[in-house]
Every structure is written in C-alpha cells, then in structure tokens.
Image (cartoon, rainbow, N blue to C red; front, side, top):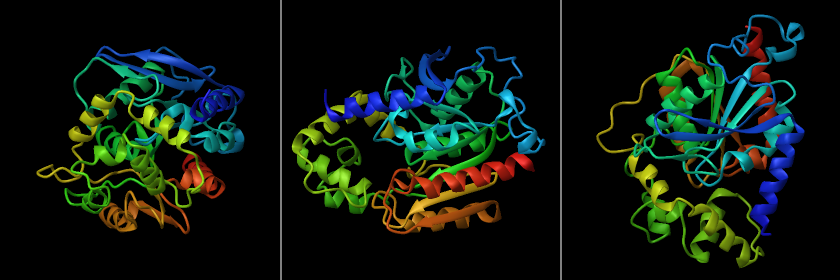
Length: 319
C-alpha cells in the first residue's frame, strides 16, 4: 500500500470518527456524486431538517440537527475524501459538513459531456437539495473556489456565506504565462497533471511552500498516478473553465459576505489576485493573508484558518 492509499485510509477513518458517512447521490443529468455527509442527512428534498441553517437563534439555543451546514469543495490536485482532515477535526462538532468529490475526482463520475465550473456549480446545488439541504455556507479552495463563486452567483438564496481559499477568480488569459514558461509547457494541464517525476516534484513545490527535498521518487510516482486518473476528463475541465478565458462575460458581483484566505507565498495564484478579488467584491468581502504560507493555507496553518471559519460562521449564525 502506497502513501496516498494510507493517507486516504486515515482520512476515511477520521471522517467516520467525526460522524460522517459515505454516500452516492445520482442525478438525472448523468452525474453521480460521492459525498461525505452527516449520519442523519436526509434523502428527501422536501425535508426541513436543514432549513434552520443559520437560524436567528443564538448558538447556545441550537441543538440536535440545528447545526448550520457547510459545503467544502476541494482543489484540482486532490479529492474531497482527503482534502479537509484538519477542518473535519475542528468543525464537525458545531457544523453539518458536506464533503463531495468533485466530478472526475475520487469516486464521483459523470456521463454528461459538460465540464464547466458553471455546470458543476449547478449540479452540486441539485445534489445538496437531494440531501434535503436548502441553505448552506460554501468554502472552495483553488478550483473549488471557482465552483463556489459560481454557486454564490447563480444561487444566492442557497449560498448564505462564501469562503474562498487561494482561488484566482479574477485571473485572465495571461495569468498562467509564468508557470508555463517555468515548466516549458504550452498548456496549464501539463503543470497541474504532470506525467514525469521531475515535473511532479516541481508541481508539488508550487503547492507547498516548504516541500522537503528528500522525498523519494516513489511518492511522486503515486502522485502522477493519482492526478492522471480521468486525465482526459480533467483536461476537458480545464479547457471548459469560463473564468479566466478570453471573451468570457464579466464576473458578477455577489450579494453574500465573502471571506478570502490566501497564502502570501502562493505560486499557483499570486497574491496580487487576492487583492484584485477584494477590490472587485468591495465592502462585502474581507481578506486574510497568511505569511509564510503557499497554496494550501488550510493545510499549512489549519488552526488559524479554522478559527477564522468558526468565528465567521458563528457571527453569521447569530445575525
């Protein structure tokens, strides 16, 4: 058993230990989502089990199934099962967590040919309503942030609060030029879906601010195998991104309050994109920059990130 398999086994144990169960939700549009859900999650869209999310009752008055819902959307280099270990440990007690594998990641599959972040956002809202969830806060990291942004824009009554971690939502067609030059690549898929150990090592160094140089090649062989599962579909997802594409419509403004979290040393999405996003969103948005952190603030400084999330969600819950 390789290190990624061991990591996945540990994550599954952790999820189950904190009261989540593995569930498949099949949609009429051809998508089948694998999602970690609370033990008592409803399968009935008419259920009001989740409607009290962000109730005006004070936190001390909330009990039983009245905990607010939080949907966690992972980035391009992982799957839901393994992406949120630190957040599950910290937040599962006070919040109903929903953790899907995005389409063509982990155990989520689709027969639908649509690949854009807009289609994925629409499908995830359908999935959540199948689970009886009428309102939820949404957190998205990197690619998951693109999807979360679209959910907030398209479904403002569903998304009560938005959290964006290291996601280049204001990027443009020239944003990736420096990365492409560094990798001597012509397409971003060559950076995000490496096929050589050399490029896999370079890609991991982009993600982690301080990646140990002594890691053996066998780990990067596993990384390559894991990243290139459903390779053609993932390349199509990158090609189908509306955000950042030349000629795309202007980004919409959002009615929700937004918390943006960014690593100052992020080499995937430069810190200037964080400042562009906060300027674009205006007074509804707050930016927290973490020093000495790369593309994974929720992994590299989980305690600080979790406290930010908890504090913001509690304020929303009591408002």
